[in-house]
Length: 220
Image 1 (tube, rainbow, N blue to C red):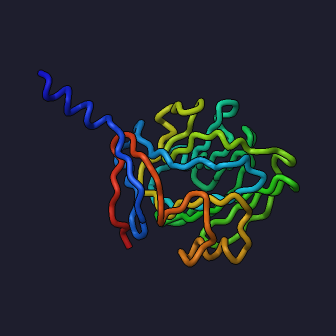
Image 2: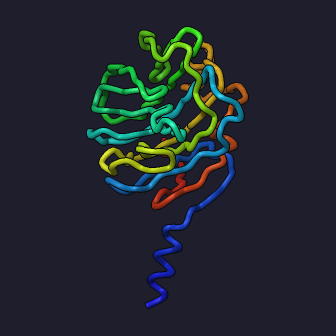
Image 3: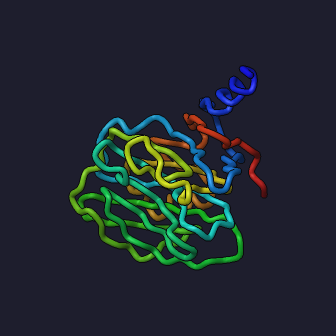
């Protein structure tokens, strides 16, 4: 009786690593699921500006969370959430703005979400193209005391929300900077070209897998 139980505990245990994930993906196999990937390290200083870029591949039509940055005082300190086909919501400090996007046949979607505190400017780029800028949380400061994960939405610091909002599919090319990327570098991120030094980088990623997520070679 002990062997199956020990195997179950082994499955639940975290898989930690730091590696270059170029041309690889996190494959979230289950639908829905409670699986996720913790990203490390957290920022050293509070954020007045940031940019987050990532690439996803899925056929989901229900809501799902992609990138969740929670703090003890705010579960949606930063959140990238696809609320329905054709709409992304991006959060700062618990508030959000929406961006309407075109829905192509199943394809990779590369998005970049940038924010600037001094002006409250939100930039949203998809597949190398900018959407009209919007305003959000002018003068706000994002706390550095963060729990960051991929594939889920947190309903409190380090705690998951309903698995109905979980991601199923493939994620790759995840980056985070503590400044707003220039338009040239936003396009470079989409094209997977040389990028500035970053807080979190796909080519030197520290991560911890919780549950049934595997690292696979990216399909071209």
